[in-house]
Length: 127
Image 1: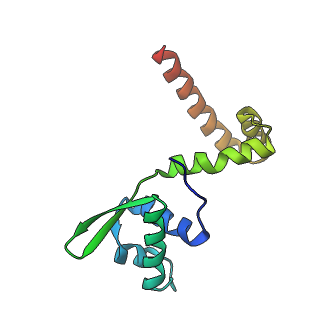
Image 2: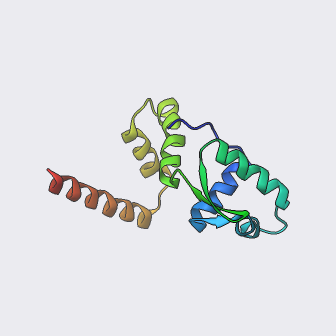
């Protein structure tokens, strides 16, 4: 499913919906830090996100409950792909090396090592 890029406002609404899991317009508006955007602004952004197929909704009488149609992880992978292509010549290994060498402290590196070791074990068991 191809998605267009999100504006900053759309990204903010998606972050809230990913955190909530689902919610009514009122819930989304109330989740913004104060002073938040106007109710009508959030309503407009939600309508755009429905049209872009980022969120769906279930209707209860006259109100809609909204929920993400794309996971945060899938959205992140989609956003990360051009970065890997443009800055790391398509190499996921080079991206990982960049973070390991410049962005992570010792405890973060140990945590990543644990995650990698677990992934390796799972892949070996799946064979």
